[in-house]
Figure 1 (spheres, rainbow, N blue to C red):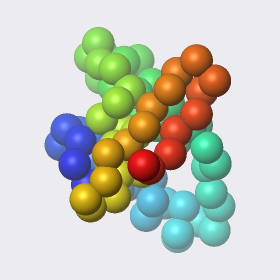
Figure 2: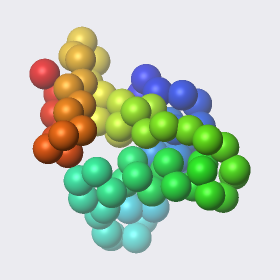
Figure 3: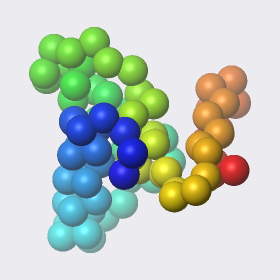
Amino acid sequence: MFGSSSASLEMAALCLFEALGGFAIEGPEAPRLGQRVENEFLGLNTGIMDQFISLLGLRGHALFLDWRPDEQRPS
């Protein structure tokens, strides 16, 4: 994981809960949930890129984020 420590911890915890609970949060909803935790619960004014890179980042690759069509994919 390459994002901020809080975003990395959020996404790691989410992956653990998904595995233990037998559910999956698909698409950009997981990073949005992490951002919401930081903004609303912790009171931090943070963006969403760290959650995306923590969840979707691949070693040796850049992460293409295009917010216009709301598309995310490794390149």
